Structures are given as C-alpha cells and as structure tokens.
Image 1 (cartoon, one colour):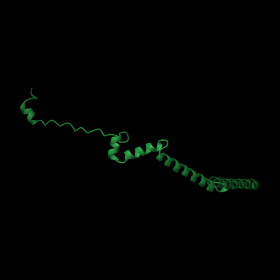
Image 2: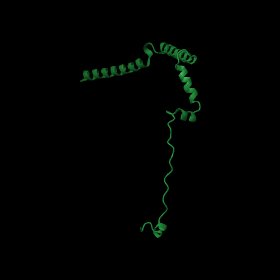
Image 3: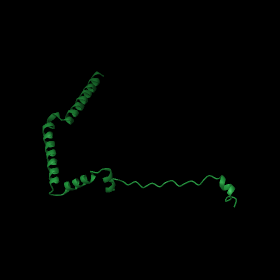
Image 4: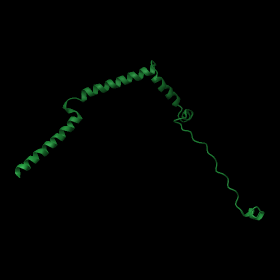
Length: 114
C-alpha cells in the first residue's frame, strides 16, 4: 500500500529498460550463405575444387599433370643434389666422427702420460 502511493512513486527512479537483443552471429565456415556474403568468390572456388576431384574432368587432368610435373622435378633434384658423400646428413655425421676421434686421441694421450 505504501509502496504504491503517489508520494513514494514520484521519488523512485524510472524502471530500467531491458538491454537490446542482438542477432546471433553465424559461422561463415559452416554456413555457405554467410561465406558468400563475406567472400563473393567462395562459391566459384568451391565449384572448382569439386570439379578438380571429378574423374575425367579437364580440371582434374590439369591437377594431375601439375602433380606429376612437381614429382618429376623433385625426383630430378634429389637425383642431382642428394647423392654421394656430400649430402647434409653425411657431412653432419662426419663432423661428429671427427670430434669423437679427437676426444678419443686426447684420452689415449692422457692415459700414456699418467
């Protein structure tokens, strides 16, 4: 009764408004329509990737030919650069062997002196 009286109600602050509701953000990686809004070329890129996987399509043949060329270039490079005693690993191991030999020679000399 007292709370609802005009004297008390006139002194009270006005009722606060509820905060505004915001729209839930959509994940563009899962939602194709959202991705198309953010990246207009995504639809064309998706279609191209799809065609690249289809057997017998021109896009798939182009992908296979570039893959074949890349593998051939890699094999050629490996054949030219990675043989004999000049490979990185063999050079690295030679350094360790030389260091171990020096240490062994130093231990033998100390044993002879003592």
